[in-house]
Image (cartoon, rainbow, N blue to C red):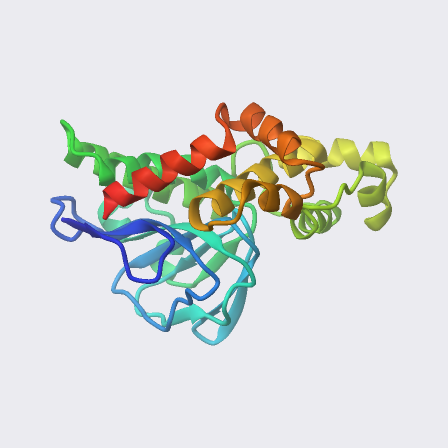
Length: 289
């Protein structure tokens, strides 16, 4: 197994796993990409899972279709299908990915039919994939006892969670998100720097504020305000880790009233300051090279 950092990335790595000793694993990675980074046409002999973590939605050509993958969206591409970004991103973005063979990762009796049908799919609300990906990538990048077992079990978790999402049974809510909430979610994501209120969102989707707030919490698992705060923090992490923008500039871009307000909010969410986060993440990714 080897790990490298492709030229042009702001941070992150690409791990080659064919010789990791675990059947079905091909490659995986965690990458922070600038707007100039465009994934060109390619294909694999296994499935590839792409989870967008932060940044604007990306457009993908997969086979003869174009797919939109939003923040926390999952794109799954079957073996042999050519895929590529349809255009460059409008802002820096961060993503996890893994190429693997589900039939080698799970026992035959547990394999969801979708992996045999070999049709690409996108899940627009795949936030529950973040933790399985983080566990898997920790095993990829850490040399420790029982590493093979750790890789095998966490790869299985990836396939299991993707299967549940595609089957319409993600934890706590149905796959088919209410249309009004999907619209409101996109409004928040597209206007992070603006203080969009519950009343604004409710009016945009033609619901009463009380009904909208209750429905949003049921569908998303948190309030609109909390969802916006979390996304702003993710966006801040991305800008801190892969740009040299000043903390004041980042604060302004994300709609904070001052750098002090930004630092306080960031520390409340992450337990650390923006400047310390920038130092820590820069050092960590340098060590991955």
